[in-house]
Image (cartoon, rainbow, N blue to C red; front, top):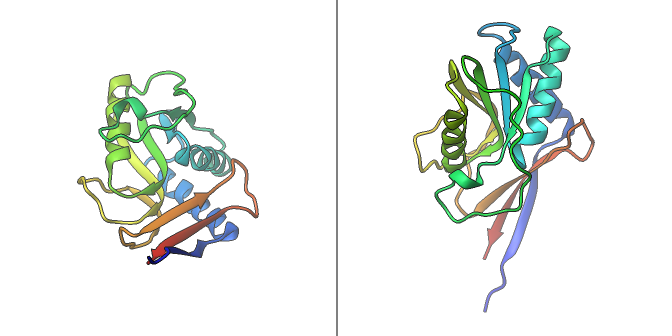
Length: 181
């Protein structure tokens, strides 16, 4: 019987994550500039810290803090992934706003599809965009991000792990773990 060995490597460190957050904030602002109708919604767990950091960077750059919410998409999932997560925190409705859904990793597209369903149930945004820290490819659904920190092609045997704090930290990193059998 062969034992499985996991091989881990760091893809992105803390300093590069800070540069990526700054770039994503600028990209989000570029089409229309700072506006009161911008609404960032972080998907619970992975997208929370990233959404908070992008919102802070947008405020730093533009002087206006975008509206910020957090979405628990478990009720909208079509697979059997259940985790204990805090409830959604959606201040106000997204009607007529540009909603940017924020998540840490884009993989199959199922989480994003669930988030889209949840946002549409909340109201009718003027536009919905997708911002991810890492796009790892291998989609099962036709979902593409509008704003991407890094594109990292992976295999199905690999996992991308994101460790991201609400505030910049030396512990911030993106790693890839490959199971070698």
